[in-house]
Image 1 (cartoon, rainbow, N blue to C red):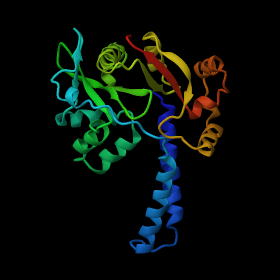
Image 2 (cartoon, one colour):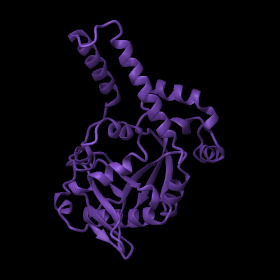
Image 3 (cartoon, rainbow, N blue to C red):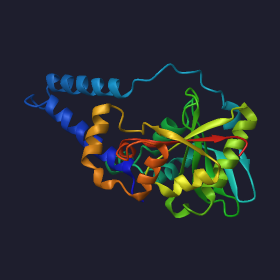
Length: 266
């Protein structure tokens, strides 16, 4: 499936590479000066991209993470992630992420570290989605960062299991159980403006489209403008309808993602 955010990721990676190459141009390979220039430029870029507001304390899901099963129905089982899920996790990520494709090409033994870094931090809580009948791993669902309000849900399915009802069923099960445990009632879902199946999934669940917000890659105003200017030809009929609905210029849907809100119980 085509993803505008994948294209943004690809172009941002190239811009990052070009900036780093410019920063060390003329400096001898392997020299301390080259290493320092590279590190200084990279640190500056990370500092700009990583600016965040004040964070809340993370919600303690340590007891839930120890459960054998978090919640289930007759079709799907949601089980907290464990280390042995690492290979499946990376196999799903490489279907959607250019960064993970690059990591896998360069080094094959990082899967467990990636799982622990992405899904097993104190501020996160993720489960594996399992088919109840066969026990097959279908995908992952969870909370990305409980220090930031409203809590954002993340879900990714193995490509062979998409558009078969696993997504909507898992979202309903997961959020209703989170609501029962925490009392939290509103959750955010950020959806690619070109991802029509995901948009339909969330709207089927009663999610409200409240506007646009930043995606995972384009953060700065000049980055957004450059990307929009280069890709006006990607604006399709669905994006025009969304822009009209949100009362924004269609070009803004190229540099942002859709901000959906789900209210529990679903």
